Length: 126
Image 1 (cartoon, rainbow, N blue to C red):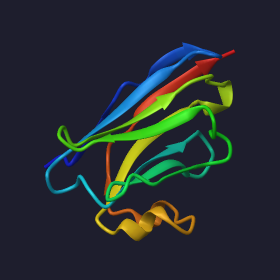
Image 2 (spheres, helix red, strand yellow):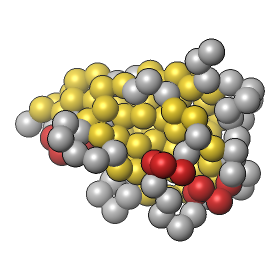
Image 3 (cartoon, helix red, strand yellow):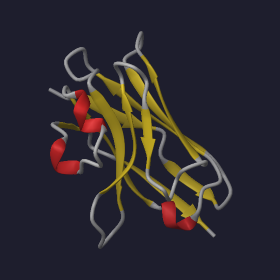
Image 4 (spheres, one colour):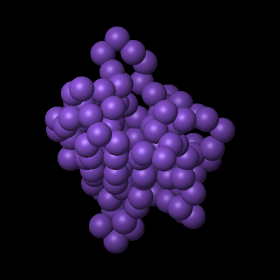
């Protein structure tokens, strides 16, 4: 049973924008939810996360001011608005969720999240 489904990836030129969405089930929406990415040959890294309990957000330094994470409680969706995209943003982007809100704090890594989506590819050309 699929619990997190990403959509919205694609190919854009540098400076462009994309919006990723993650549709969650009633079981997986909540707690701490976020986006990670993994480029070929690199480790998976956190991009943005949101504490769905109070809306607190956190971002990787590399995306601050360019990316915005948001939540829609009624639709059980989290989104990632990505603006001013750079070639180095090219990666597979994964939606993650964990029922424990504390996963949103203290710089926790991918191993601390229980639910994962299948990923959506983002490619930014120069």
